[in-house]
Length: 263
Length: 377
Image (tube, rainbow over all chains, first blue to last red):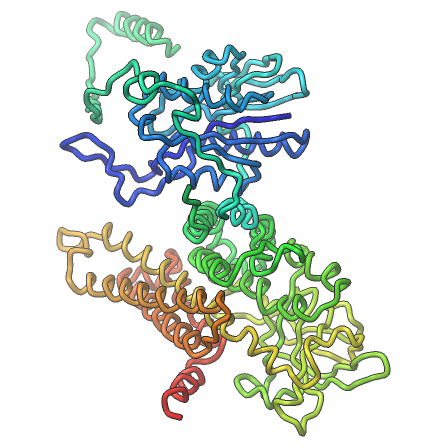
């Protein structure tokens, strides 16, 4: 079974600070990490490879230093990595990113399963997985909390729905996005980590020319959205007095709760 | 394409492991005083126990620098865990790796790197600590091997070890030139140990006396050459000292991290105590010592990795970082005020644990003498 895992290097947002004037993330002194949900996807890939053999590849789009995320994934047991790094990829929204990742997957060509984390902790969109699946015309299984069965033709998973789950079967190849409940990601092994940092490590760099894409299709130029401003929304809690006698007030309260799907 | 820097990446991976797996349970392990088998197995699963050894014997193919980064990070979480891991990686297994047969590697070294067997290194005796010429554990040649009689004390992992690298005397008249290391599995008839010592600090470290009563081992269990025990020890002495320095760096960082967090939160006279200059002076001293100790220690690890002799530099790094760790732990308890005297906070553990570093890897009184000797001869 050949598995491609899409990963992203993100700032460790456990101690995030933003510039109050610009609204931008203060990146100085902030560690970069593999996006937490993506670690669960890597664990799936490595576990499946151990069970069914085949090849596992991670693909990441980012600046040159994103190679650390790929090296760490190789330390966890992934066979090889591809870093999509090109100045022209910069400023991409989820549309342009999905297009670029999709092109890389098309270039890899041989795959049975594509794995992604549910969403990245910096953008929080949860759009990349589904968009890549659409681009490639693959079935998509999102919010996967358990993989029950998998063979060379099909996969059966449980999709977490918040208040329950849905058991779904899909033919392969397919794309799945995973959530944290699925597994406990392993820590990298020292020997594999050392290999990943050597000159002959199985990590390849692909740029826009390698993907045969035009500058207009990628990065800021290929993006359909523009970020005008980033800011922390001010959340103001406001109380509201319900008028009328007890019966009327309770009736109004029930109406509001039901209207907001809280009961 | 530029590759990842293994030293930075390994430190990052280890920091995450320590933050997630070690620090949350460190207090519990310290209080119970039990050997942390679960953490030890997790460390083994990451390939850490074989970090110094080549892949051909089942190791991870690392070096002294990576080894020290690892034990430094572990010591930041729990000093005794760092020390136990450091022992397993180096003193407990190096003789076995260098001088053991393929069969011994299969039976003991590989399982030790997988965390399935625990090794120990037995030097100290009641009358022989820094003075190894006074070792009295005797090894007497028999037809097909050696007969060992004697005892060792302050035996790290003595009560739980599966095998021991033991310094013995083959000919008391020869003093240091009569020393020899032998490999003694715990299941050798005649091997026994005392009950576990009750320790002030590093409480998960299992220490005891161990006894050899006519323990017979075959010829191939002699580690190194007859009468060259001191040379065997000197092979790894720089590494032992810089490893101890790395443990001290980890402890210093823990003390400093806790101090910074606390002094920013603790408010007195209407402002955080971090705003007072005497507290700032303590933080500044900790930071300066940590920076200097880090530079000294990793200079040594890089020299070892290049096979450049550096025993004096290693002794200085051990001496400086350990004294700095003691100061940092002391200052941390002062920054915490009365809370530093409470078992509620971890700084009391750092204060207790750091004492171990003063004796392990050579007492500072002896180290100062050996350092001075380099300049006074």
